[in-house]
Length: 176
Image: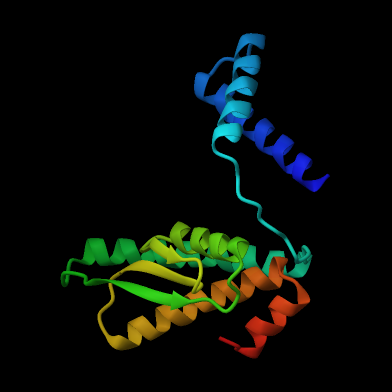
């Protein structure tokens, strides 16, 4: 039942995107979008993503507030670095191993990290649970350690918002 619901949600979402791309809300666009959505999902089936956790309102609020703060701070730091022009910033690609290796956690952490200005996911290793992150303005080894801690904090907040009790125990216990 859950698989059918997931497919219907995917078809509906793809159809809405199709209609938005066409910029036309007609019966022809609707049926065309449905047809294209079904064909795309038949040719490129979505992998199964299991959700073992539960939504935790306090954790979601904590994640959302901190995410907005991170966006503001990173945007300001990036603008300051660009406008101050004191030195040429150095960048690096860092490997960060996550505590919880589920596909859902990897995806959510990768998205959250990439949305913050100054960092971008360039690759990930599903089997090892490692994110490879391009980081802007890394001047010293202390910056590398700080950024790895920040990514692990993002993971901790995400798991606190949508994780299972077992995943929370792994993240809070520091099991790596």
